[in-house]
Amino acid sequence: MACHGEVNADLSLSIPEEKQTIVLLQGVMGNVRLTLPEDYGVEIEAFVLFGRVNLNGEQDSGMMNKIIWRTPGYESSEHKAKFVISYIVGDLSISNP
Image (cartoon, rainbow, N blue to C red; front, side, top):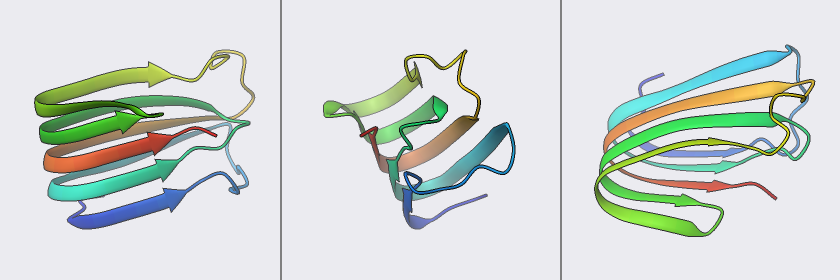
């Protein structure tokens, strides 16, 4: 999915249909805000060339921000979601309640 502008996704109330879901978000410019479900195993691979990445309150800004992160217990989770996020210019905010 190529995205320009805002993506606000609260997945904390989602109901899984598959054992593993992969979400691809990429674009030139954009702001992405994700709220992750507590009962999923979540893996995030994100790259923002210029901008800011905020993961659970820890923030990096500037150039070439890259994160690879998994929730604790990812491997043993029944349902998994993987997010691959790539923007040239953007702000990425991820919270895991």
